Length: 413
Image (cartoon, rainbow, N blue to C red):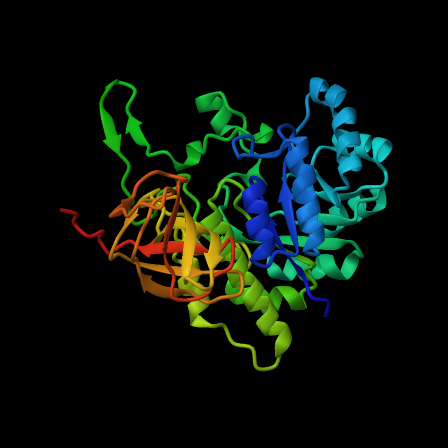
């Protein structure tokens, strides 16, 4: 069994670096156009060059999404963009549209092509089709079950990529028109407004303006809020099924999410390959996954159609037990002090925890807090200001600080 790669989301340059440092073998990202996450930070050409160079130094690959369904105008603009990606040296293009695929094969035949989940590959015959066209990998539709993956693997030689964690779409592999209909933003062009997460009421035709709440009855309600995917418990099954790449969704998520989820899946996969016969899931991994923002977790379609178990009818609110506080920018070993770029306010005497790419979370009490001018302060309140504080354990750059939500900040005089 070949060890699959961990493929993590990179919504911007900082998230790319976090993903690579926290264990990703590869990242996927987009330029400012032609990708399915138009409202992520995304990358300028210069940022993409820096990101590819950073990934190379750490032995990681970079895949670029070109998975919109293109218009004629897009097709006219694509050749120049494709040539720029070739100059940068990206490892693969993620494509859904056959026209974009054909154009990429013509303009940059040296770059590998991965078929996006948006292409809805649900069977071995489709996988064989794309293999025959020259694609190296196919990202299977999220509706594919584990037995179906096994059969696809047995009938094709191309690489198989599978989503293992993150948001699910209520529409068929993301092919959705609801956002465009309600908000004028097409999900098929990377502009999804997530209209499926909105709170809905019913209006009866003869009573305009009277809004009726939607309740669940004994037959359930078939509304739109899908649970999040979590296949951590099934990693051994996916390895045995011959999956080549474990994909984490989340280019719109925070660096805290990217670091935490990537780190958990890295640890789990490494533990499995270290001792396959005696592998057991560490309960701490699930605890970590519940510390980032998420909807209730589900195994999706892996074991069959989840029906109501794949939906969350009671609320669209995201769950999390912890919140992101800051990121380590420097550490002085002699003084045992860290420089933190603040992302969420915190104060003297508050309990935080710190963790890094190779260090386990450790709790500590904030002490001797100073601002960027070296002046003592009681609370860090300016987002992205660099503050300093005592750090009892050595920490690396890009380690993260988090706070347990149930603990309240101390009252300041």
